[in-house]
Image (tube, rainbow, N blue to C red; front, top):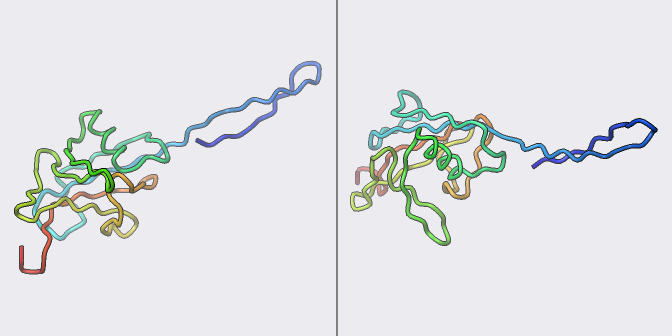
Length: 142
């Protein structure tokens, strides 16, 4: 929250301080590519989900929760006590760990892999965040 104080003159010369709580908000767009190992970050996307008026300090998981509550996005995750949410399913498409699949999260100005997970990453106002299905392991191993 951002706080500021404004003084308002009242009849008789008295000053009254009014404390206004102004909640800053941001907009974030969730993008999804379901194609396994597509390697691309640009269109076409399987889903484009704008999430508006989120608290300025919201983490990515908060953005995802709001979109899910609004019915525009669906996901499932496994919660790890230390590392936070591990995204397992998006829009009904499960990343199959037995096949070394995972949902890679990309964002920022360069649309590059995030160094933090959904529970820790704080997207900026106007940011696009991309989820794309990927496999891990040495090249040629997938």
